[in-house]
Length: 311
Ligand SMILES: Nc1ncnc2c1ncn2[C@@H]1O[C@H](COP(=O)(O)OP(=O)(O)OP(=O)(O)O)[C@@H](O)[C@H]1O
Ligand SMILES: [Mg+2]
Image (cartoon, rainbow, N blue to C red; front, side, top):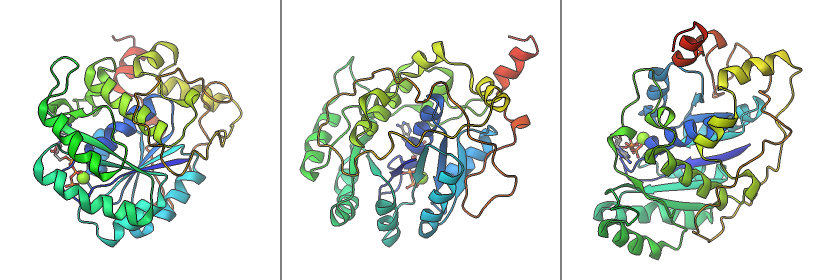
């Protein structure tokens, strides 16, 4: 199991927005994802409740209980934990930064934010924890060319001596609102720029974590063409003997690489053949363990309509 935090002492940097989008993206690529909300504001957990879909799984816990929540997730066969964190977390930020494999620090390309990121970078530096920065809510590019605000932000961020994602996440209203069926925009439009930017960020994060090139994420649309819908995959798994997720090619490098080169986007064959979901989780929840909804609630509306002969 791999673990990623969204960490920023500054409020409103985009921790929750990116946590949620990376989680649904990773899930769409066949990972078994748990979002862990350690922020008392519970924004990610509120999003999950409104979503009414089983994936990704969700756990809520105080930062001091994160280690226990991660253990619970691992026991349940989760392959990726994405940890949303509170702003102004103080000492708790150290706990989170130390507990995960990699810390992704979102930063808006604005003067206050570019200054405030120093506090988060200090925590990372004191722990020598693996981390990288992503510019979030950047002005829209002109074609493929970044706007001066983003370019200036990159120059400022360069002084922090951490890798910076080559893709900046653009300020887009579609990242703010779930669709009527609880899904995110990027799940409905996996070939659009909002989705491919998140996919590129995800590939970059994996690269920083030392994930082997063959494990780099495929673009969501590529997987859509080749893989069955998540619900269908679940049924297949239930009809076959349960098989544990291969432990892996796990154990990516704990320290980040310094490269900020673009991701390679190579297709990722699933280890051990097509996805096998681990055994169904027990009904009773352990404290801090990620929960998911029962299968009967899990049919996405579009799949359900198709099964009924609808569109
Ligand atoms: N790339 C983006 N495009 C458009 N809106 C965004 C983007 N990123 C974040 N936002 C919006 O900015 C606001 C703050 O984002 P978010 O809640 O993700 O930040 P946060 O770091 O989790 O904040 P907090 O520190 O309060 O937990 C939200 O309204 C969110 O919808
Ligand atoms: Mg938040």
